[in-house]
Length: 252
Image 1: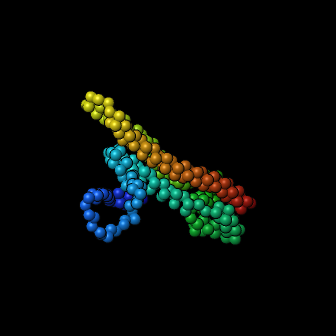
Image 2: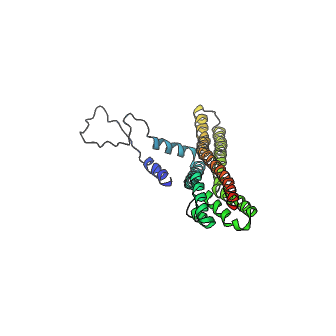
Image 3: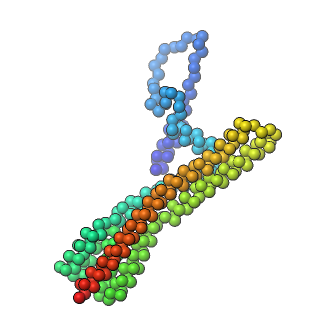
């Protein structure tokens, strides 16, 4: 993500100035290489427009918002990868553990859980490891280690929520400061110019726009991650109940 942003700004530094030749002067025939990045109709490329708006908004206010967006996306992508790797077929795991219990007992079931990745397998292993201490200890171990697994899945969400809250707040702050500067310029000039007022307000509102865009993007990732965690948590609870019932049947 950082390399992509750096590439956008690197491409944005290419400025193309086109000048028309006077009508009364001969124009020399020459071969001109056409850059595919330049729009023939004269419209500004997207990366150039983004760079211009970034500079108009002021690097002091836009840069922190961009940093929040990049860090939030990095944490979000890491959480999504972690949660996807943690997702397993719980029904298949339960069938393997049950078959191992019937054939090889507790140790065989523990080996199945040890060889399986994911929070459900880890909870199963902790419960099976305390089987000899009684079913009460098994249930306590399952509940306690389930809380640990949920905390691990929610790791980093606090930072994403912080970036979601700070991005628009920082944008609003930049807008207020920009408006104050615009009114200071009007006061110093002694005259209200529509161009001066419109330009100052436009520049001031760019920081709010950037902050809201960053917050919306991060909120989408945050909601997806929370829904993924809720689904895994529900699966963990259902699987834990199945494990306890399975051990009660095995004990009989």
